[in-house]
Length: 168
Image (tube, rainbow, N blue to C red; front, top):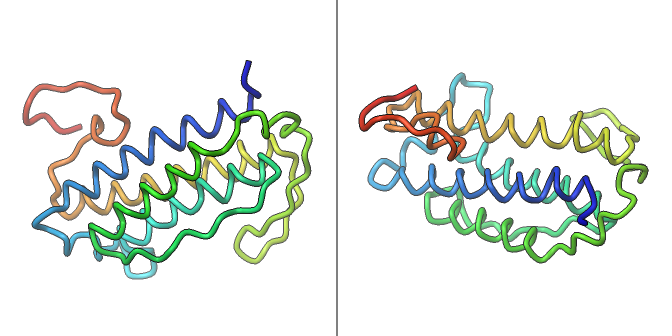
């Protein structure tokens, strides 16, 4: 049996990183949409993708009691973002599930903006890490959709199925 916080984190991160990679791939020929923002003071779609990829590691590795690896800057274009997402997935796949044993009670000290927080592993994942990862993933989707990329809910979650041309 794998530790519960492994099951609640790494497979979810891997699934949505795969979805992000697919969204980035769909920008081929329209790469300028990656620089778009919903509003001027928010991150661009490219920055949202990069932040989500980073969050997956920033959350999973402390839960496993390991230092967060630094991903090389691959650039903020379609190719670089694709490479970044692949690198994050490779790091997660190599992370031993056994390292998550006892993660629920592990105290994780981290920063949330300018706040210094100490949270149990469970709170760190469920109240900070996963919501932030999904926030940045969702914002990347929202910017790309707002820019006219023909994507829908099925592209976001990989679960829904709609008729050709239907966009939710």
